[in-house]
Image 1: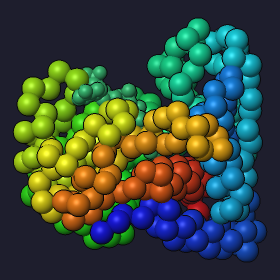
Image 2 (image 1 turned 45 degrees about the horizontal axis):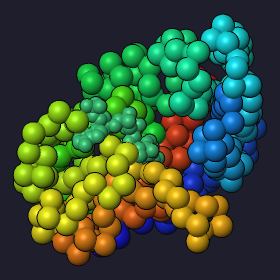
Image 3 (image 1 turned 180 degrees about the vertical axis):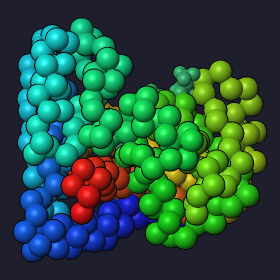
Length: 292
Ligand code: NAP
């Protein structure tokens, strides 16, 4: 079975649009997301453009703030301070990665926890770990929504998460191990120092591949009937494509789809679900603030 993130994200967007329309009919203002883009990295441009476009589709307001690649950390911190204070802004996202003169950690920590719709701040992560209401980072959130949509059985299953980044692997491992409708897994988290990774993967009922190595998970690493979520997005040079590149996941789709019970494609799997995770967080930020 194909876990069709493109299609499921449309379903979620339709629900979010209905909820936004209801707010507007009740005389409320629309939720408002502010996105900050520093520099002009091609992939970041695309991600931010998709987020802004999704806001428009749902009926959210969005403001895109573009800063030059040589912007200082101080200038960016000042911009965040302004957005934190702005009552009309519900959610703030700063597109990562940032240029090297800026500390990502300092920027993440400067965003008001009430507006941290990316869920990257230590406050949000701490709450996630303790099972408290918070903003779940968009990519793991999107994957949980996908598991819910397809009613994938996770209880008691062995999930192997490859990658331990703060934005994908680690939060996903926390969610899957939490006492949630699509959690309660026994989780193994793997990284670049893991020994016998292929063996560990072969024992997995669920594999989350989030390492950024195209085609890393091959057919021989997956047991029959496993559920495979491919987070990887790498631009691989391809002269036959109009853009000059092709997006490749961390999973060898051809080999693994022959064995997996369910698998996400790249593109059209986890990527679109990430955007709706962010949109849901923005609506939550708005609701928590305005108590509507
Ligand atoms: P990251 O910060 O670079 O982290 C990669 C992780 O993979 C690290 O924990 C690293 O281990 C581990 N790793 C690297 N090589 C490995 C190997 N050979 N064996 C085992 N583990 C290995 O990456 P990220 O930000 O989490 O992103 C991962 C991928 O997902 C990228 O392709 C990215 O573009 C994509 N992504 C997609 C979405 C989406 O919406 N679909 C969202 C975010 C990211 P160490 O910690 O030991 O270095």
